[in-house]
Image (cartoon, rainbow, N blue to C red; front, side, top):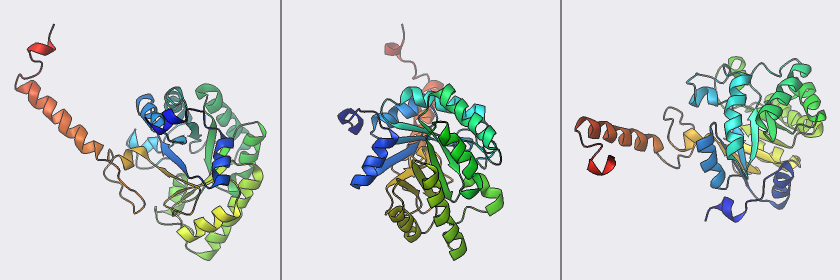
Length: 272
């Protein structure tokens, strides 16, 4: 029996807060389509993130920037239909919330209405605070995202660890408090020193989810295709591969091709 079957009650933002208050770790993972999201949900994950990383793993782009709002809505719609238990959070893609809080609200409302997701996620701190507040004031739960923010890759110039310098660390701490005060229900910290992430998790009341941020936070998130070995080229230190599905897929399809060419498939039992 899976963890989800043992506890089929729908996860909410309040559930996550209760878990954090009790010291229970939160498991979060990405999904981008109905079939995979259904398996993820059955496995007992607490939060499913429809990440803009779909641009990388589903469409083959080198960054998350090209994916559009319409494409995010398409991916999220299938995931929401699959998830009976997990909280579904959807990334607001690049260009749909930065610098214009009215456009940000319209983007968030489209996601909530057209996908029936449970929340949205936004990258950045003080720079996007007006948009965060406006979306939350409309009743849409917002998850923040600080540290390495992939939508800002052209500003950073690389995917190196962030906030190693004191000035950037101080700003990150300040931004985390600003997001909490604005009403965010949780924050993702990506690729920052573990000690800094631990300090922020201790200072904030809301759940802090880490990816490459050490183990002293309230939960963890990984990209599904990375941890299953479907994508092979991404191998950061924080990534643990729990399976090598990519190799199994290529072997299975290779065997199918061989069977077809050797006239072994279909056999007499596989015909009408």
